[in-house]
Length: 445
Ligand code: SF4
Ligand code: SF4
Ligand code: FES
Image (tube, rainbow, N blue to C red):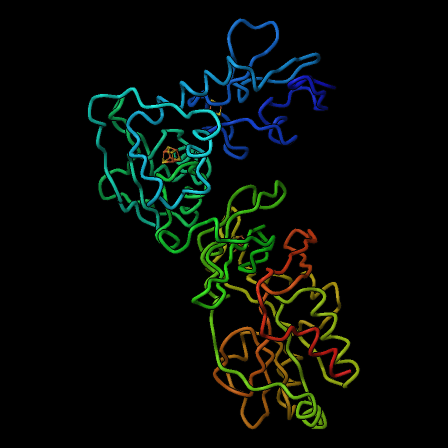
């Protein structure tokens, strides 16, 4: 069916929430408390729209679409309502945007610039609340910046069901808090930082590290386990330091991770910045190694389908027995996103019919004179006796000859997750001085 939004027809399904229809069709609809994966709460009133036939403005997050609905999101009256709400939100706000980490991606700041633009009427001192409170799990709270949208509270009560956060006090004394001696403590806690639409919740890990307007983003996939949560890699090349990844943010995918990540995956960006020493790549030297009789190769199950395919072709051509073994960690998984299979692409290994038999691999290893490791963690800190060991590696290896290869931040690729969902990821645009594995193997042809 169709509805009319600011005189433009929009197609939608009966029973959809009006705010979802507006967001999904790129219509600007200011909102604090509504979040597509937390649902509606109706407390902030920022999403007011005019609906033909209704006397008063209505909130879009509690309105279901129906045939012939006519909506106005931009009238004078609506803008005046938004301005009044913003004035209330900012009444006791410290307006410390220049030192706030959310500046540049803050809804309150954006909406003020779009709809507010008023002088404060307040002539009494602002109400003071707590600053830089450590809530636990890397999350810092500034109570004065909070707009009490309750997203963080709803996340801990409805999603993780750990219930650490709540509101205490009333009126202008109301504030977000944890109970004494009960810190924020769950393995998904840092999602509240991303959910907070303002600078009230910030990440200890990211705060004061980088202004967000200096960051570029690439659409990628977390490699922390086989769930394959969708992420943005936020990175920057500054004038004075090497290019660097600063954070992972959740990228919404309704079928996989909604708008969330686990804290382990979120912080795993640090591995992408690790530097280590490696040998200089010479095709001819490598070809000499290939003359050695009895060779075996082990490939990481977190490499992309494209990389695994190139490795498979290389091994077939050079009579190298190829294996891939899964990364299993029985203590990692839970009943939500985290999975014990810590490989990003074990389903891809199986699709390419690469042997995953541990016994066969161990037997081949005994006989082999040369072992080629394609970024598998097993061989990075374990040296089989009396063998030559060559690594194509994205991280430090304790033994053998190491050829550094680009990590997934520099690669485009395809992964298949634990539910068989095939997903693409894309490289960041920053300078990559480390060679890409597929290109190295190409040179050996
Ligand atoms: S801390 Fe942030 S997410 Fe929580 S209620 Fe305040 S503004 Fe909303
Ligand atoms: S659940 Fe797995 S894929 Fe998702 S963020 Fe955590 S480690 Fe990464
Ligand atoms: S987003 Fe609708 S009331 Fe808050």
